[in-house]
Amino acid sequence: MQKLILLSISTLFTIAMFAQQSVYSGSDDKLKYNVKVEQLTDKVNDIFLEYYVLYIKNTSNSDVTFKPVFNYKDENGVLKNSLSHDQFEPITLKPGESIKGDYRSKRELTLFKEFLIGNSGQKASDAQFKFESISTKY
Image 1 (tube, rainbow, N blue to C red):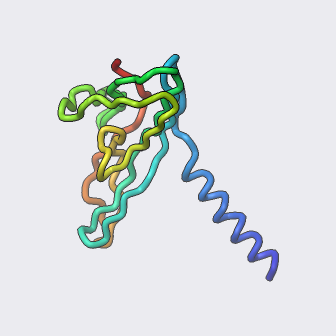
Image 2: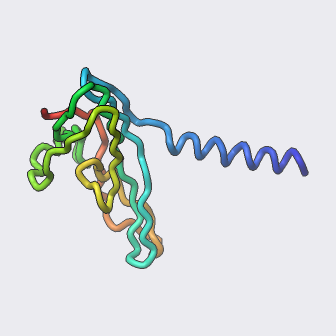
């Protein structure tokens, strides 16, 4: 019985670790960034999806203003980027300051990945994006 409990806890811990692992990480002379996958669950509206979330930290000694650019492939394999999303304003970080994307409030730091099966037993759509890389426009 103890082995079964230990095995169950180990399995859950391993799943949690893999769920939070970086899909991509990198840096330049001003910023350090990580991209991870998170889930959005809205049971009321039957919306279940995964999205890429960007974590950015200013590693320089001065304020940095930038726009993050997601490079990705759409469901047809066509390479695209988020630079055309002009509704987002540039972001400014102070030295040492960090910011994290959120699908509801910091959309400019997120990229849709794919819909998951919802309460209805179906996906809202088969649309999906495959993250390729991140770049910054200063």
